[in-house]
Image 1 (cartoon, one colour):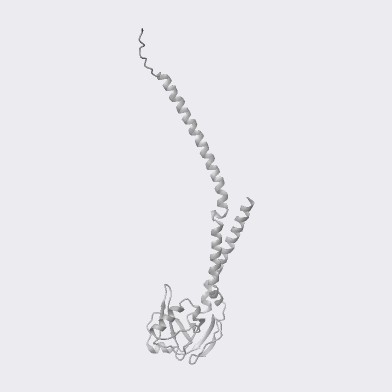
Image 2: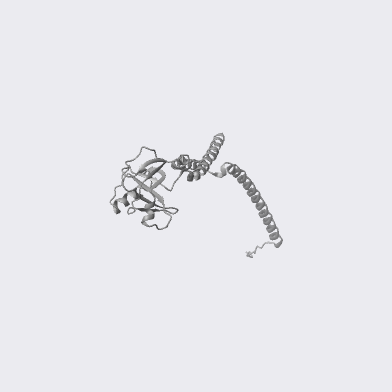
Amino acid sequence: MTQDNPTKVTQNPDDENDLQTDAGEMEETEDLEQSDELEESDEDDTSESEPRRSQGGGRSPFVMLMMIVAAIYLMWSLKDNLLFYFVKEEPVDLGNAIGFEGTDLPNDSMVTIHGVRNPGRGIALSSSFTSNIVFPLMGTTKVLVEIEDDGKKKTLEEALATTSFTGRLVRIKDISYYQTIRDFAAFNFGMEVTDDVLLIQAHKKPSDNWIYLLAYAALVTIILANSALLIWRLSHRDAR
């Protein structure tokens, strides 16, 4: 019986080099194929993104619709200020404040009333940009006057020197800060401010509202531009 000698199998160095060369060529081929696929994919993405950018910069129809609605809402909320710009500057004389019981004139009319300020019942109103004072006139509970606070302290004589006030007429129930005035007057002066009280804004005149013309022009431009773009987008979507 002959005993088989164990045989050690080794790889020929030349064969190993050949295998490494073949593997390297295969990897290069795969890399080239992947590169070609990536380039084709990039081209497809570019061709798909170009139509999207051309259709309103990628803005969705919902966003355009919301911009239109917001612009219309702003136009509606600012309409009284715009209409006041076209009111005649010449005021209607309401007469003397003593015994004054009201008027049928509409809001935003220019009026003048004659009377003396009640110096002990002033209400200071301030915001980020303005500071005003609201006060009643002697002899009536149906009208309040609002003036701009210039920050200068006035003596009693100076405060009583003005005997007529001209400005924009509004029903006090129609202004945003009506509740503030009513509560302050009731708490500090025991004075009741009812819904039929008139407020004469002596610091306002029609020519000051020119800025609302620019605001309306900008809002109309936003509405027209987004409406046209929205129609274009929807029509092309239906065509596809």
